Amino acid sequence: MHIILGIAAGGAVGAVLRYLVMSWVGRVWGHDFPLATVVVNVVGCFVLGVLVEMMALRWSLGEASRAFLVVGVMGGFTTFSAFSLDVILLVERGQMIAALGYIMASVVLAVGGFWLGLVATRSVL
Image 1 (cartoon, one colour):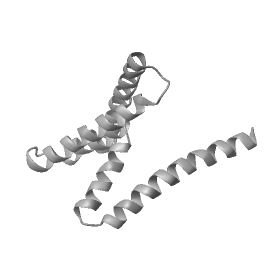
Image 2: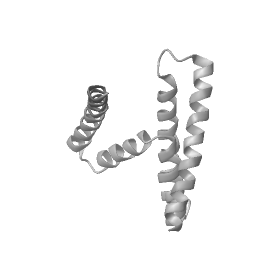
Image 3: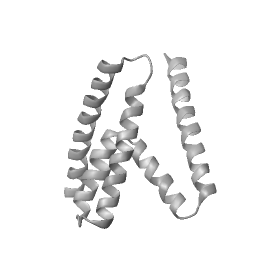
Image 4: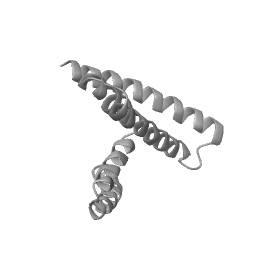
């Protein structure tokens, strides 16, 4: 149960950080292009890369701390970081076709799923 609570607490931290970063980027550069989302995704991926490597090479964290940081904070900040981690793991295993398939499927299916959700909701309302 402590792992679940840690993830929930980390998710709250990540979500608040996401809101703050997106608000700041919007104020500085405007809202004409979704630059705030790009910034959150790039920063989140960079931070997740640092965290994963530090946990592999330097930090000896328990399962609850790893879950708090990776699943909670980073998951609340951006799920694109988890997607990027999955891609890199496939690439490092030499599974280039699987990595490319995962990238294409994730982007096409996610955007398609969003579009279908819009269409379905519009048809009901």
